[in-house]
Structures are given as structure tokens and as C-alpha cells.
Length: 166
Image (cartoon, rainbow, N blue to C red; front, side, top):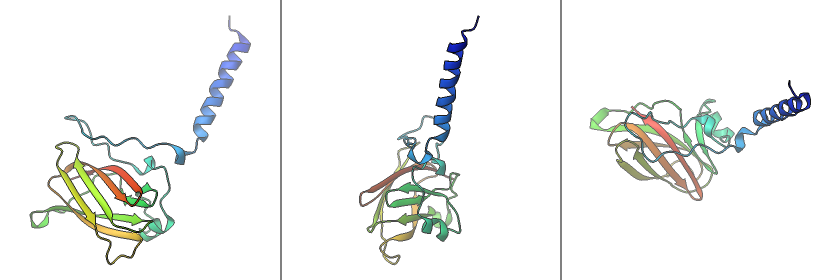
């Protein structure tokens, strides 16, 4: 025999919890921490725009013809397509262009590490010619293709994301 008052309580509590989860503010959720290494055969956990906790500046989206593929916050944003990024293989180099949006003044420092081999790249992106804030393109060289973790800093703003370079 079913205890009707108990069943109502259980169903009511379940419905309340489901509604609370559905209405939670997605801007308040914490992003998944980026790994520091990958095991053999583990897929590259590419950072998705849906993981961001803050919307990008409207000017960044407008400048990119409505492309909302920006990840970051707190004054620093990186273009993050959420899919593999094709490397340019000219002149014996492996390189790609990367877009940044600076909400505060300064130069971006970047450390990128291969999650498969530990190879690393460190650079400071000089903002000369692009004004103290706003869009900044960069050309980044890599020793190899693969799954890379990016740690970027601009003043007090810091972001970490993962991209697959092919």
C-alpha cells in the first residue's frame, strides 16, 4: 500500500529540486577545470563557449561579425571556437592566428602546454598598434599539433582554456 502523504511529499520535493536546477543562472556556474595532462587515448577536452561564466563584451561579438565564440572574463577574452583549430604549416612552422579581447590595458602573457607531451610555449603579446584595449590579433607558433592548454594573463585577469590544434 502506498502512503499518499509521503508520495506527495517526495513528488513535491523532486519537482521543486528539478525546477530550481532548470532555473539556475547559467552565468553563475563554475567552468570545468582544465586538465594539466591527458592519458593515452583520452580525448582532448576542448573548452566550449557554453562553459564560460560571463558573456563576452558586445563590442567583441560585433567586431567578429556576430561570432560569439569568445571565452574568458574579468577583462580578458580569447577566441575559442570549440572545435579543432587548423594550423598553418607554411615555411616549416606550425602556427595559427588567435584573437584576443582586452578589457583592460596591458600586454597579454601566454603560456601554452601540450597536454600529451608537456611541450610548452611562452610569450608576451605586444599590443603596439592596436590601442590600449579592445581587439588584439596574434600569431602563435607551436612545436607540434595536439591538445593544448592555454593560460593567459592580462593585469589581474587570467583565463585558462583547452584547444585542439590539428
